[in-house]
Length: 76
Image (cartoon, rainbow, N blue to C red; front, side):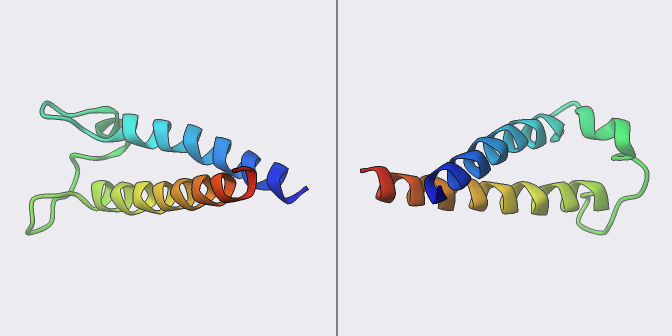
């Protein structure tokens, strides 16, 4: 039961991670510009949208990593 729950969280976080990475802008801008990525910039040159997108991506990546480790310890 626990393995199934962790597996579902792992798959959902993997899909979310792919989606969030695709939202990041590359050299010439990306999908994040559609959501107001070029409206206001801070002193560091990065927008608030990009900073929040970075934080969310890192959080989802950590969830994915922990779920993967838990699954490898339980199954293996």
